[in-house]
Image (cartoon, rainbow, N blue to C red; front, side, top):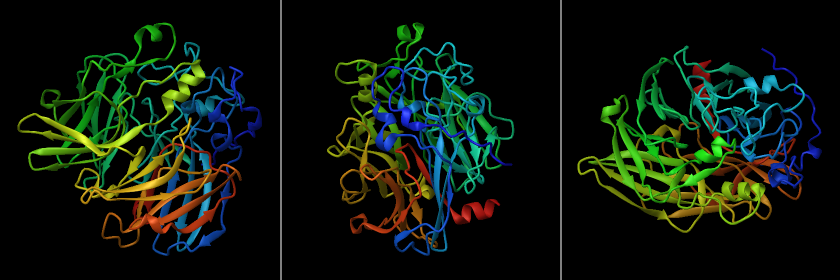
Length: 488
């Protein structure tokens, strides 16, 4: 099915929003790109490894039209950029995710965003959150399709991993009711997919399992003290881990049509451990120090304990004074540290502490084949000390020895989340490559860097130059060639 043509939009006028202030998330390395491109015979510096076969895909916000009101980085329409590697060659394409909202907006923005009153917006998600579901956040491969998701819970949109064609909403054989969170977990060994949804009204949290056959086979409502904003979850071989963190929407602001978050340090962080297909009565809650967690590294079972590694934010509330734009920039700034929890299933006790308390790293990836099983390595982006979110390098953590390796892109060059790409015949969780987009702020150009995962300090083994700039964005995934060949 052919995709509808996207109108050419003059993005140069989108440096400010209706506030009149220059918005950094509409400028420079964040500025939206105009065209959907397909390009082959790309210039390569170095040599693409012959045993790197698959496709690297990254999602992110890319405003299609001038925004209504004040622009928040999360408001941008979902656009996926992808590079397909095959037999030492690479080809690039980028496509918008054709969501229902995308199709409704033919020549102008119809929705206001996170920072504005949303009462007049055309429609929202099934929980009544009247914001535009742009499917701009993550990409997850499951049963032959890539699912594009949205950070506030929306509809998962199916994409073909090679053509990037939007195939419609994934309903899991018409068994999905409600919404779908940003970061579902896939167990490659069982073929199951684990998810939750949440909302401002009871039930505040629902947890479900999609079976290997593609249908929702388990769904349970879980009680929380009130509405929360969970972002990620985790699994082990026998359990799922859900979060009740003390960050939530300010109800008085919500009644006034404003979106404001409150971080309550008087409340603990709580982690709910539930059997994979458990009932609400079987969940066990473990308490820990207050924090917020955007992204999980991995979790697994070790004797009587469950080990959970995360990127932990200790101060998620906006810092400093200023107007709405300044508050948005402050709130968006990532300030996270690699952190480990241990939940003892016998004693009910929690142990917690930093793995790396010094380095601000986020957007972690692992060998996806080990999701929910013991893993040794994680690959995180290094977050630069700047006003906006800039990923200036990659950090490899060794969870056995405590060692870490670092690779930096150079001055004014910024990367993306870098998934682990196993080489053909890979036998280990660093026997392969990391793949990432890198954008040069001064030149306005982008490339793909391929690094050997075993030793990041050696720098890229190949750089693939791209035909257009790739704006900085959110999450990425790697789909192996054997995965999409088996599915086709």
